[in-house]
Length: 624
Image 1 (cartoon, one colour):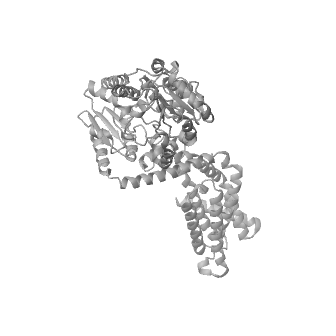
Image 2: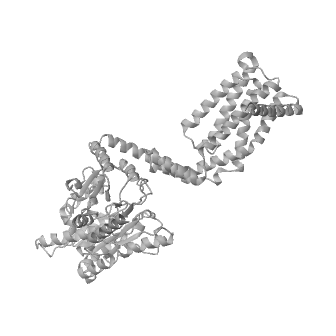
Image 3: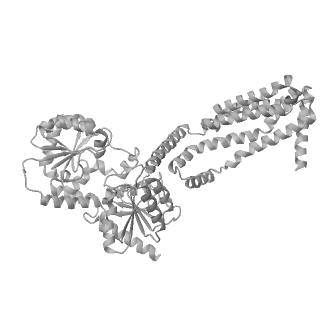
């Protein structure tokens, strides 16, 4: 090692003497020497520039990983490792330039001592030599300032990192300037200033803007910021959650339960209805234990616990971790975007079959993110349209094929059963007066925001009974507006419903008026009654939905189960549209039943179909 160090020092000493022989002035010679070392180490500087660009280029994906797995350092580290491996990037490589600079500085200290007359040490000599430490500190400040502005990597650091590094560099330069020779101090100052020149030239030669998507970078920063804010709120809520102990106990209980065959996940109370028929059929036909996770501590399912039905409360934060630790044969969810956001496939068991059960019959291509269902193994499809668009997406984008099960809709099956029962129990009443139910969606520019008063002004002039049933979220946010509307139309006996404990008004209405709410097809197919659609701005989650040729059911069925009216034509057309829907044979129960059987699989049998598939899969997996 000593031989190597001596060789480096001798090489630097030879270079300094060469520079001195050219100009016969040690100050100038050290400046030229510093310039030549920058030239010699230029390949290393180019490599650092490219590596820094690569680091920042990865930052949007890195920020997305941090946002997605926020608070779960193990998952972040694993995803980081995958990213670095894919990009052939090593964070330790950033230390190489630092070691080279330190080795060079140590060699320069000895070379200046042996080969120049600039050996005075300011702390001992004093006088004019004290200018050198000040020059070193000022040059360090200038270099750090420019790096914070123009260095591709340093400019993306936080304020604490930027100015912490600046303070440390200035303090270190000032300190060293006092205790090393003036020649070394001068070399250090020249090196800092030439580093700024080199930075500017490298940014021109290898311009970071040509390689980095700064728009994506800013979006990822915003995503990470929102994740921090969201987690801060969640942690605050968790600390004050009276069910915190239960959640912790259920989490441990779930993990300790061995040999789990099937797990259902529900985001909140009320979601059991999407699984009800399937679960009840599995329990009826087998002795399989259903493990049911809910993120709502007051979910109705806790009243249903039995030997074959085990509910667990696990909040959303713990659910993120639990999903990655999941061990079961089959995982059933109504939550889309598996793998895309917080909820991931298991890291522990790779052969779990993930089944997606839809909430409604609406188009996943239109109302979900475009890749929302890509990471499921099996999709329970509601009808031919739903199945066709998923199959078309797989073919168009060469995605792995999924099991597309012709299933149906348990929600509509159950709504149909409830409607028939309620209809049979309903008294005859006044059959001359028909009920029109206005049930808007909760999206922007819905009926209540765009045209409710113009609509009501016309409808109250008819003999029909008018009921307005806002979306629960609308009532929650704009209750005062609902109350003001109720007061305005009180003399016309218009009912504004804010109690959602019963669906009787939905079932018993003769006509539904809505915009883009999923309630339209549930109402039409369960009651076999028509729908009046108001063409407010369409609800589009996937702006690229037209990439597929399959027309979304939301659009295709609109003028088959009802009539569409443009917002600007409500005043002229709404009354005639209502009369047509209530009288036209095109919208008779027989016609609606044919549409139902055309657009839905296994009408009335979805629970049996879903349970049959799951049972057969479990039998096959256990025999494999």
